[in-house]
Amino acid sequence: MKTRLFAVALIASAAFFVGCGQSGHSHSEEETAVEMMKVEDMETPTKLAVKIEGMTCPSGCAAAIQKDCGHLSGMGESNVNFDEGMGYFTFDASKLTQEDVISCIEKTNGGGHYTVTVIEEGETEEPATEEEVDGEVEALRVVKHEDEAHS
View 1 (tube, rainbow, N blue to C red):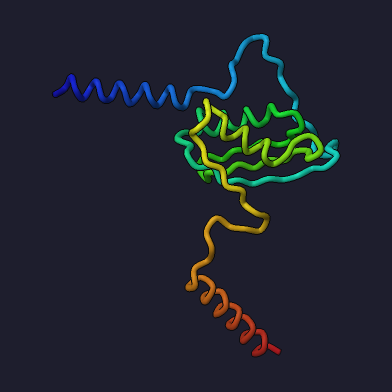
View 2 (cartoon, helix red, strand yellow):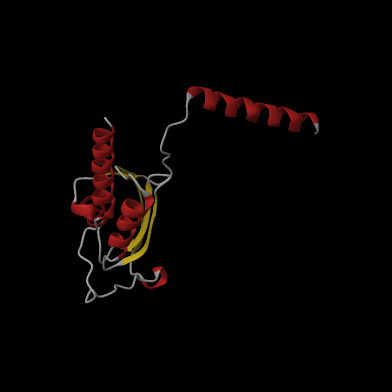
Protein backbone atom coordinates (compact mmCIF):
# COMPACT_ATOMS: atom_id res chain seq x y z
CA MET A 1 0.00 0.00 0.00
CA LYS A 2 2.82 2.43 0.90
CA THR A 3 4.61 1.63 -2.36
CA ARG A 4 1.47 2.30 -4.37
CA LEU A 5 0.87 5.61 -2.55
CA PHE A 6 4.49 6.62 -3.11
CA ALA A 7 4.22 5.77 -6.84
CA VAL A 8 1.04 7.86 -7.19
CA ALA A 9 2.66 10.79 -5.39
CA LEU A 10 5.76 10.52 -7.56
CA ILE A 11 3.72 10.46 -10.79
CA ALA A 12 1.57 13.40 -9.66
CA SER A 13 4.67 15.42 -8.78
CA ALA A 14 6.30 14.64 -12.11
CA ALA A 15 3.14 15.64 -14.01
CA PHE A 16 2.96 18.91 -12.09
CA PHE A 17 6.57 19.84 -12.79
CA VAL A 18 6.39 18.84 -16.44
CA GLY A 19 3.13 20.74 -17.00
CA CYS A 20 4.19 23.85 -15.15
CA GLY A 21 7.86 23.90 -15.97
CA GLN A 22 7.66 24.00 -19.74
CA SER A 23 7.74 27.12 -21.78
CA GLY A 24 6.30 27.83 -25.18
CA HIS A 25 9.77 28.22 -26.66
CA SER A 26 13.19 26.83 -25.96
CA HIS A 27 15.57 28.75 -23.75
CA SER A 28 19.12 28.86 -25.01
CA GLU A 29 22.05 31.08 -24.26
CA GLU A 30 21.80 32.42 -27.80
CA GLU A 31 18.19 33.55 -27.28
CA THR A 32 17.92 37.26 -27.93
CA ALA A 33 16.14 39.34 -25.36
CA VAL A 34 13.26 41.32 -26.80
CA GLU A 35 12.78 44.69 -25.17
CA MET A 36 9.18 45.66 -24.67
CA MET A 37 8.04 48.89 -26.27
CA LYS A 38 7.35 51.97 -24.23
CA VAL A 39 3.66 52.82 -24.37
CA GLU A 40 4.42 56.42 -25.31
CA ASP A 41 6.40 55.17 -28.35
CA MET A 42 3.50 53.11 -29.69
CA GLU A 43 1.69 54.22 -32.82
CA THR A 44 -1.63 52.68 -31.70
CA PRO A 45 -1.49 51.68 -28.01
CA THR A 46 -4.19 49.11 -27.24
CA LYS A 47 -5.13 47.56 -23.90
CA LEU A 48 -6.39 44.01 -23.58
CA ALA A 49 -7.74 42.25 -20.48
CA VAL A 50 -8.38 38.52 -20.66
CA LYS A 51 -9.60 35.79 -18.34
CA ILE A 52 -7.19 32.85 -18.52
CA GLU A 53 -8.50 29.46 -17.44
CA GLY A 54 -6.29 26.41 -16.98
CA MET A 55 -3.42 27.96 -15.00
CA THR A 56 -2.33 25.67 -12.18
CA CYS A 57 0.57 27.61 -10.67
CA PRO A 58 2.02 31.14 -10.62
CA SER A 59 5.59 30.27 -11.61
CA GLY A 60 5.16 27.78 -14.44
CA CYS A 61 1.88 29.02 -15.90
CA ALA A 62 1.30 32.71 -15.17
CA ALA A 63 4.99 33.64 -15.36
CA ALA A 64 5.49 31.66 -18.58
CA ILE A 65 2.48 33.34 -20.25
CA GLN A 66 3.66 36.76 -19.09
CA LYS A 67 7.18 36.12 -20.38
CA ASP A 68 6.15 34.57 -23.71
CA CYS A 69 3.71 37.39 -24.48
CA GLY A 70 6.31 39.94 -23.35
CA HIS A 71 8.59 38.66 -26.13
CA LEU A 72 6.08 39.55 -28.85
CA SER A 73 7.32 42.39 -31.04
CA GLY A 74 5.02 45.34 -30.34
CA MET A 75 4.18 44.36 -26.74
CA GLY A 76 4.46 47.17 -24.20
CA GLU A 77 3.11 45.65 -21.01
CA SER A 78 2.50 42.01 -20.14
CA ASN A 79 1.10 41.23 -16.71
CA VAL A 80 -0.52 37.93 -15.74
CA ASN A 81 -2.10 37.60 -12.30
CA PHE A 82 -2.46 33.96 -11.26
CA ASP A 83 -4.72 34.70 -8.25
CA GLU A 84 -7.19 36.64 -10.40
CA GLY A 85 -6.81 34.30 -13.38
CA MET A 86 -6.36 37.42 -15.51
CA GLY A 87 -3.90 38.76 -18.05
CA TYR A 88 -3.44 42.47 -18.76
CA PHE A 89 -1.59 43.53 -21.90
CA THR A 90 -0.77 46.78 -23.68
CA PHE A 91 0.44 46.42 -27.24
CA ASP A 92 0.89 48.45 -30.42
CA ALA A 93 -2.05 47.53 -32.67
CA SER A 94 -0.02 48.61 -35.70
CA LYS A 95 2.36 45.68 -34.97
CA LEU A 96 0.20 43.11 -33.13
CA THR A 97 -3.43 42.07 -33.06
CA GLN A 98 -5.58 40.91 -30.17
CA GLU A 99 -5.59 37.50 -31.87
CA ASP A 100 -1.76 37.42 -31.80
CA VAL A 101 -1.77 37.90 -28.02
CA ILE A 102 -4.51 35.29 -27.50
CA SER A 103 -2.66 32.83 -29.74
CA CYS A 104 0.54 33.36 -27.74
CA ILE A 105 -1.29 32.61 -24.48
CA GLU A 106 -2.92 29.50 -25.92
CA LYS A 107 0.43 28.19 -27.28
CA THR A 108 2.39 28.74 -24.04
CA ASN A 109 3.71 25.55 -22.39
CA GLY A 110 3.16 23.51 -25.53
CA GLY A 111 -0.43 24.60 -26.16
CA GLY A 112 -3.74 23.12 -25.17
CA HIS A 113 -3.59 24.15 -21.50
CA TYR A 114 -5.26 27.56 -21.46
CA THR A 115 -8.65 28.96 -22.46
CA VAL A 116 -8.80 32.70 -23.06
CA THR A 117 -11.85 34.95 -22.78
CA VAL A 118 -11.59 38.63 -23.68
CA ILE A 119 -13.02 40.94 -21.02
CA GLU A 120 -14.60 43.97 -22.66
CA GLU A 121 -13.79 47.38 -21.25
CA GLY A 122 -16.08 48.10 -18.32
CA GLU A 123 -17.18 44.46 -18.10
CA THR A 124 -16.83 42.62 -14.83
CA GLU A 125 -16.17 38.92 -14.46
CA GLU A 126 -19.53 38.21 -12.87
CA PRO A 127 -22.70 40.24 -13.40
CA ALA A 128 -24.19 41.83 -10.32
CA THR A 129 -26.93 39.86 -8.63
CA GLU A 130 -30.41 41.32 -8.24
CA GLU A 131 -29.78 41.57 -4.50
CA GLU A 132 -26.59 43.63 -5.06
CA VAL A 133 -28.40 45.98 -7.45
CA ASP A 134 -31.33 46.40 -5.04
CA GLY A 135 -28.90 47.13 -2.21
CA GLU A 136 -27.16 49.84 -4.24
CA VAL A 137 -30.50 51.43 -5.19
CA GLU A 138 -31.58 51.40 -1.54
CA ALA A 139 -28.25 52.97 -0.50
CA LEU A 140 -28.78 55.74 -3.06
CA ARG A 141 -32.29 56.38 -1.69
CA VAL A 142 -30.91 56.70 1.85
CA VAL A 143 -28.19 59.15 0.74
CA LYS A 144 -30.71 61.22 -1.26
CA HIS A 145 -33.14 61.23 1.69
CA GLU A 146 -30.36 62.38 4.07
CA ASP A 147 -29.34 65.12 1.61
CA GLU A 148 -32.94 66.37 1.37
CA ALA A 149 -33.22 66.36 5.17
CA HIS A 150 -30.14 68.58 5.50
CA SER A 151 -31.33 71.11 2.90
